[in-house]
Length: 84
Image (cartoon, rainbow, N blue to C red; front, side, top):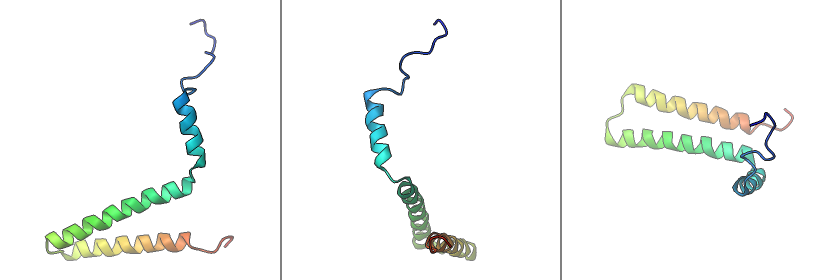
C-alpha cells in the first residue's frame, strides 16, 4: 500500500446496501422493545417452569414479585403522557 485510502470500503458491497436500506425501514424503538419483551417472556417462562417443576420457596416468589414490579414500573414509565 502506498498510504492512500482505497476507493471503496469493505462495507460497500451489494449485501450491505440491501441491509442498510432494510435497516433504515425498521423502527429501532420497536426492535428494542421486542428484544426486551422477549427477554421478559423468557424470564416469566423460566419462573413458570420452576413453579411447576418444584415447590417454590419464599425467595423465588419474592424474586418473581420483584420482576413483575420492575416490569410494571417500566410499562408505566413508557406509558406516560407525551411532554410530561
